[in-house]
Length: 536
Ligand SMILES: *[C@@H]1O[C@H](CO)[C@@H](O)[C@H](O)[C@H]1NC(C)=O
Ligand SMILES: *[C@@H]1O[C@H](CO)[C@@H](O)[C@H](O)[C@H]1NC(C)=O
Ligand SMILES: [Zn+2]
Image 1 (tube, rainbow, N blue to C red):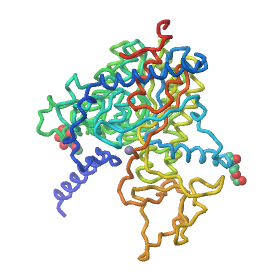
Image 2 (tube, helix red, strand yellow):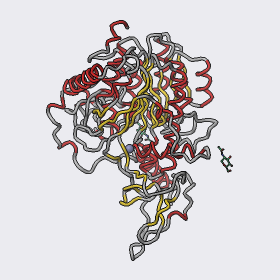
Image 3 (cartoon, rainbow, N blue to C red):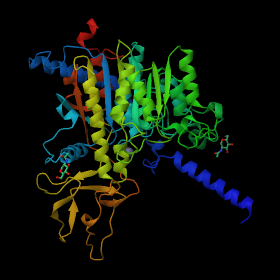
Image 4 (cartoon, rainbow, N blue to C red):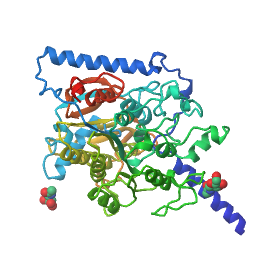
């Protein structure tokens, strides 16, 4: 092979790797054209969702009054200074029950009787997760609901359902942009921040700051690919650029997670040897540091766990931490020396944000529960759920119940089933006591769909997968329908609440009511405010 040909092949290979990396392997775009589905006209108006949330709050007030519930006991006596919203991406109720049993079993107990940290919260409700044009949500439209209080189209973030997915112009239209609870907190003089185990430009954290027609537009290279016919100055800004330069992301005091590649030029190699993917040559990490300096803030950038621990001991005014080129490693697979845990990230965030006496809004995401489920890797999904519980425990220890509202929820479910009539204390990640009708054992956890399909014999007899190495974190639990990525589930997810006004989060609510109820409790935003807010 000639040298030129060799170089051409190498360049092609690099381009392929680059493009594959830029795509979200867990969330392939739908084969159906979502653009042709007309949104419900009334729902396109953010006021529709605001009125619905206000009537839900009024219903809770009337119910509490009718029941003669003592104000303090119902958690209605105080206003919330701080709000921390914990999000388990894809943390279905089956995931919670299985993770709780697995946690207990790690401590040599039967397990089922144990509790995740938030199982002890005084209030629990259910959230309906459908989106404007989708029966089953993705993390983009659902983030718009639980952070901005508006239901949007699948794949879109921080915009109303007037914006179709991947439209190169529509999302820049100001009338269609929906502010988040993070922006409401900033407008009140409080601070805001985000923590995630995914890229900080991934769908869920982006709901706090981005306005975009396409969740995949994390860097300018992604926008360029989809909007090739649109002049570059007319294209919508990519999510990383919005985070550093646009309101409200440009006011965040804490940004912690993965995703360095969208912040660095495609010619720059990061601290751990990965290339950036920006085409515009901008180094957004340096630009962020420069912006903080111009504001007179003492800012720090962290890329290693030791930087983070130092920042926790002596909190700076503002902290940007990007610990991987893409997502953080799964906790079970990470190097514990270099990669912080979600609890450590949460503690650092709270230390920085607590410097503002008016209070703060913090978003904390356990984002890889979802990725593990998409690969049918139940052991990883349960471990990531336990890590989220640890982060909640850390926050609960650091923040007083009387002035800090802690919420824990999920954006959508998954299709993992917790099934079979297994005896008490049986390894929840192991085989069921039961056999199928051919006498072949099966696992207590299995999936409706995903890549974990096993071969069946000609007589349609299943393979005995209980003989395989299921203690390997990458073991794929059995799936019924072959799909490269297991899908999300459409049933309700739980909402747990502790702190001021916690009782508001009982009952069944639209996902879009969550930030509006939190804003009511914390005296923020455009909607109704709790009675104690008059003293606030
Ligand atoms: C659980 O039991 C095993 C086997 O007896 C032991 O090796 C392990 O240390 C125990 N773990 C805990 C957390 O007690
Ligand atoms: C990097 O970006 C420049 C500017 O757009 C482009 O010409 C070049 O092909 C890119 N390199 C790679 C490896 O993608
Ligand atoms: Zn997902």
